[in-house]
Length: 255
Ligand SMILES: NC(=O)c1ccc[n+]([C@@H]2O[C@H](COP(=O)([O-])OP(=O)(O)OC[C@H]3O[C@@H](n4cnc5c(N)ncnc54)[C@H](OP(=O)(O)O)[C@@H]3O)[C@@H](O)[C@H]2O)c1
Image (cartoon, rainbow, N blue to C red; front, side, top):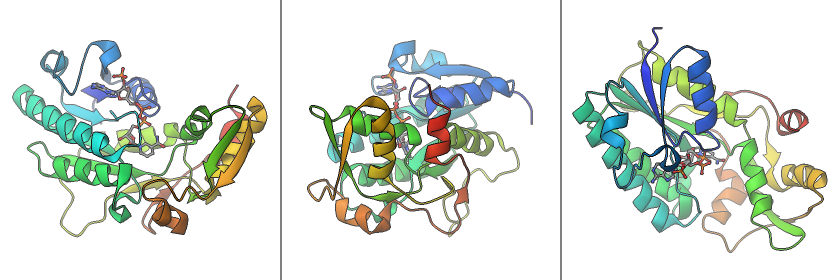
């Protein structure tokens, strides 16, 4: 595998920062792209300049909230801009982070990821997609969304995974010169998940105990997609690659 110039959209995010680390450790030249680095994938500000000489784009940019319509618009526009600017710059391919179970969602963020995937597969750049389970790092955000000292967290099952583990898998996929440019029809989209099924509210309670926050598990039936999630809709398919650390092992490594 040779070293390449690789642009990372969402380079400052939960996943993106690990992608930057993994690429740097492997000797690639990284172009970090986020509004904080002067590149906006929605307005295209700074995008053409950032993609100069880039061979591969890794897309880990995301909408900041769970509202399905706004997230759909974000992913549709960002994907069109990354593909169009990428083609103009002579980029060879794009690798994209998505979410396990989005194909089971009828509404909300999961449905937005269906649009994200479809827009990528429509091209013009050859796209490789990796679906990931909820990140260990996402559990902290659920605590941050609380009001007062009590966090109400869904009791959904998820095979929580470390963002670093997802970053390694996505970089492998993005830089594999032997992989086909586009998945063959009928081939399942690759998935990466943690080593075991966890209950999101139980993981949040472990983190909450450290932060002095009480966590109450709720069925969250008012949230879009909650019925599907409660029934196991966030869990990986049998072809998923499973990799540690578990949530508790990961938490033990956090300061
Ligand atoms: N979080 C999870 O548990 C999880 C699980 C599975 C899959 N995923 C998927 O993984 C991807 C990354 O998620 P994440 O949780 O790492 O996201 P995140 O922490 O919210 O980070 C989002 C990134 O996107 C950038 N961004 C937002 N708007 C932008 C714009 N207009 N132009 C350029 N950059 C922009 C942000 O930087 P600036 O604010 O500086 O622009 C930030 O770097 C998403 O597709 C998500 O659906 C997430």
